[in-house]
Length: 417
Image (cartoon, rainbow, N blue to C red; front, side):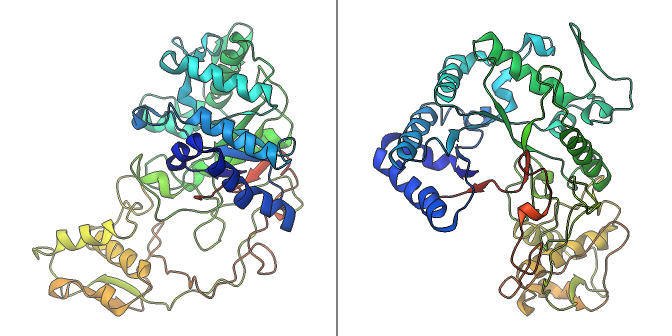
């Protein structure tokens, strides 16, 4: 799946030539030259989120139509389908029962136009479903209901069907919305599903492994949902952490990866392969020197420059592992300051000037300040690294699992032009 960012929707909606050019550059050239397996073009990403204030309501469908037209001109429309990855908030149920599901009233007409277009062209409805978000936004949400191996008493009965996890209930709410509007046979692709490992009290390695393994177990077993028992098509989100991603939705946004940014797996995850771990660490990764920037032992917490220095460092690096319930949540004041300084230092490739905070607040050390679950990371040498799953050739998705026809890992690539 290759994707088009939301900020390109206006151009593509208003120019068939722009759509033709985008397809030629980002689809046709790759299929013809390298035999890349491109199955979908994702037009936009969750464009109807309420936080966008309707910015993309008028451009998403025309852009979708123009990209499809461009694929047809290129002779690729039977091989590559267009779709729109939508957030699960485009449908709703007033009672929380899946059978009462329907599309959101404020966008229902638009949604039905999009659904008709997808159906007419043999394209799937793509939805991103995140049980973690249900837990994050609702402190009263039953924890066990977020996972597939639900051992709690939480369940939902809807007619003759019983739901023991929120993914199945959410998915089938969409199924009911489609069915009520005459599109009960439209295929569904899960564009994103996963669980973050840091940045929130419920974002940790144990929960992420539990959730993703539970999901994979269902896929491997060919288990679907009560309304659609066949196995789902899905994309695990995501392959790698994204240490520069916007954290507007929450600090967890940078920690969805199955792998850390250096290509090391975070936890064992069986993907239905002979390798019981399933995830193979990157090889040949070159790191910078074993040096860390920390708060100087001679510095004082009362120094008036401390707060502004930490704010400066965190604004330009990544401090999302700090805070209540996070991997570094147990650090003391000095530890928090050191973490911020080191994050900035590593982000700037250990430049000497990146550990020169005012009033001699900082110092470089060769002693690893990591403690417990809190890892003070060292940056990789991005210019020389030959990371990959096998043989230093880069990450090979197909080598990760033998069920990749159903589940892909981190192969949703967004092209900006």
